[in-house]
Amino acid sequence: MALSGELFPAGLLVFLATACLLDRHLLRACLAFIAFALLMALAWWRLDSPWLALVEATLGALLTGITLLHGLGRLGSRSSLPLRDRERRPRQQATARWLAALVWLTLAGAAVWGVSGNSELAASVEVTRWVLLATGLTIMALGLWAFAHHLHLLRRLLAFNVLGSGIFLLLAGLAGPAVEVQGLILVGLVVSLIGSVLGVALLRRLHAQDGRVVLGDGGREEAG
Image (cartoon, rainbow, N blue to C red):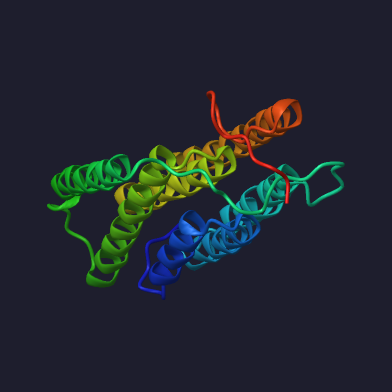
């Protein structure tokens, strides 16, 4: 994985992550995540890591995408979940979580600046590195806020996967083409897939038992 000055799809990654995490229509949100994972694969390709791009496309887009769609009941399942998330937190809680995400982003950005601000790299490499860091921090902040804010388990799984992608980008920006970093990203992709499979199994179990889509006492929805 070489940090070069080639075009990196930072803006589109942030846009797709935002669409995935904010859309209450669950099927659209899952499709947005699949598009996001495919764009992540393209990003790894642009960073001269074709094997990591292949793993991202296979584990992140294909297998995780199939898992999420199965969780909705759109792939061979006997029952399906409602396609719209109607669970809402109180307004004051939502505001607090936005502020927490902003504070976290500020602290993480300051830490990254302290770690990488004194490096001496070629200009094109330095630009790509800072784009990776900024994109990773933004996506991590979105994923962290969504995981804390959303009640619906499927939307939390989406946030979990998006958060992981932000961490991978941050690692790539901080450590560059190190083989160890690529190994960590690979392990992270495997962990994300396993976590998604377990989360979907829990979601379908809860929904099959009493119609719940969240942990706790609430979250009963009528199929539709």
